Length: 138
Image (tube, rainbow, N blue to C red; front, top):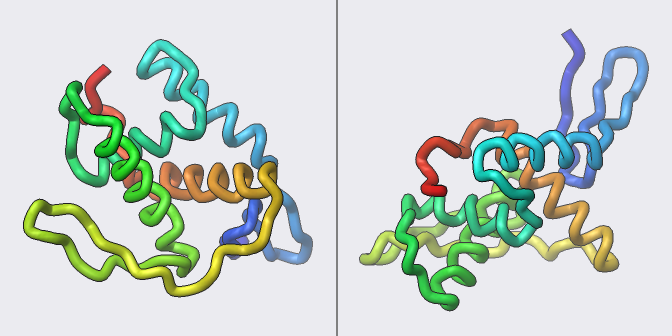
């Protein structure tokens, strides 16, 4: 069985005599298609981060303030970057909100590279089956 190694930077490499690069864009389109099927419209990266934040907080209220939406997206970004060692969860406060500590600096990237970096981590999150789309409201 080939060994899968996640390098945290846009690809999964398979080491078994040869290296194959995964197609980030195709995986992203597949995820978008699944979410369109579930929610009836194509979400952008921000909407997907918001959904991840809602999932992590189990907060499915339809009347969420703009500030809370931003906080949920922050929770999502920290959560998706946990497996690559950029953040660690330090504690949850009395309201249940997670607090994170940044462990290492994020790579210096242009805007497109940042988007791909986040997309790759979102895909990892979904691949790890941490997302329960059935729990989300439409």
